[in-house]
Image (cartoon, rainbow, N blue to C red; front, side):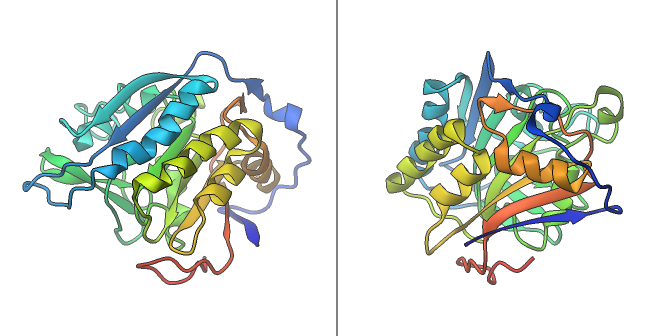
Length: 283
């Protein structure tokens, strides 16, 4: 059984909201990117997994077959923190050319729980960093203030149950968002270990396909769930109702306006899901 929960950061502000009030529009001329590491280096560590690229290509290719256009497939190469961090954190960061330049992106890399947030392994060190830290107490990733709406992480521990409150911190820019109002919409990821194989390509294909016919959150949690891994869909907004409407109804081809706030977050996951490498889901 799925469980849907919203959590406040401030007091509850009652709000009656219908779908049209969220300004949903059909997606046109929207772009998608893929970033994945299959061949890691001695400099930063990590074991090679060749199937990762083919697996996430299931999502990337299907998004292009549906309503999006491919805007960059980055595999191995110079995969560093520079592509994921925000220029407001470091002026040399290039997220506005990479992850924040796409309407939707998928990232495949090794992940870990780093206290109160997810940490993703990079291929090479940049500015002394072999990892990207996103959410929680980290201020490296402020995504969504340029163009991005949908974040998909094919990475372990990318939405652990003890890190939920902090994920929202990576979905807006505290410097730019107050003036431009731009925020990311959804973060689809995993509690605990996720698994990589060529046989799972179809699951990612189905996420992209079903996310055009129904909600992205349903597409993610239904197609990625099995006995070994626990998918989590996550959204933000300025109210409980607004967050839940976004989580339950936003599609890749019916995209709402940017969330008006981030003081509420809500998630969709499987009750008591017990993945490898983590305790059972119990936020």
